[in-house]
Length: 597
Image (cartoon, rainbow, N blue to C red):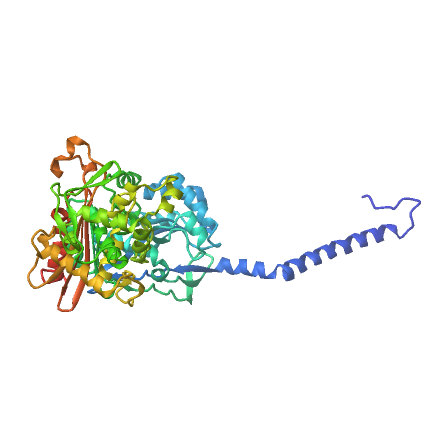
């Protein structure tokens, strides 16, 4: 047995000293390491130990429900099932994801992407939702095999349900799974959460969403739950009530059945939206469950654009409805008086070009009342030239045109009221005489949304107040401005609108109802200049894309109730004959035929 011997020339104490030194160094390293683990990293390892025996579970808050004006639920919550995993408990996460894909039918690559995205937003031993919506049959299948797949769980969460389907789709919008951009922007969101995508659901997302709660529970070595502690209670979202009346909404949908168009009804004194129909529509429930790519493509490619919220997202030439604005501008500027006579022989010359009135033989002698009642174009060609484009543009803007209404819905367009400066900046071309002529009858570059026009009509009725359209019944009236016209001017225009409905030659005689004061203005907005072969044909014989748009803007009042109504039919043809019955159906519903209480 060999022994350690120091070199012959080394001191006798060298061997024991080296061993002693090495021992001291070793214990010093161990001491430092123990100090680092027990002092410096104490909190870290304490939390890790806690995670091994305590877990946290998110408690989902129910989204606020939405009701119509009479309290009927139109957006509610129903139980839904999601598949989640706890990564640390899965023996083989890839095999587990393979199995979840087989259970649910979810594309494996999509499932992997979802998992990787959620992994960055969930803590250790926290349930991570990987499939947000599964059927009850799928739940039963998973539960029957879950004992073989540790770490997999079924989470019960509230899911949105729209009881009225397509009836209120454009108002309510819909919720769907939050995308990567929304998750990155909002730290409160977790993978698999639903958020508002359109309509009220998007515009009032923060009020509707609520706040999640949190629960802590202890587990033993086998993963059995030993006890739970509520750390934070979930806070339900705010319940909201619309001002929309479902019977009135249904009447509007029926009136527009088979047509592309819209009808809007406002309470003229408060600005509350009582009806807002966009036709055709879609079922928002398709999006909650996760719409297929094929179905999404079909909606996007539909030539009638069912996803488009026409009252606020579509802009159209207002046609002769714009004559109400021009009448006010002309009276206020003094270029005409109520008794000023302009002779219409059916045509009007500007330079070497001739512009025709819609009535080929002309209207003869026309004063202001007759110009509105019979919608004489030559009268407004004359007035438009006398005013000029700047005066027309400025007055229209002060009447709320080309201005956002401020309704609580996303993606509202503001339309255009052109001017020479606008044309030069936008199109790089100078204003010409024909532009003034076209603008004077609501054609050319002038476009507006149906809701903007409804707000303008409401202001004519309520004393001149431009009110913000209100979707919630609890919202107080909000005045945004005042029509730039004297009381006498406003009353003259209203009386002329009443003549449109009640006097011989009026273009909206279809609206006359005994006992109800109704005033209206029809509009037939040209989409394109028709080719010669279509000029004298009936609307039904003209290709759809070439047909005129049909407008009818009106008010109706009785027993202290006053409403502004705008009906619009895309490519419908004549305003009175096509949009008139739609507006008439709303008046019937408002005053006693199965509509308002």
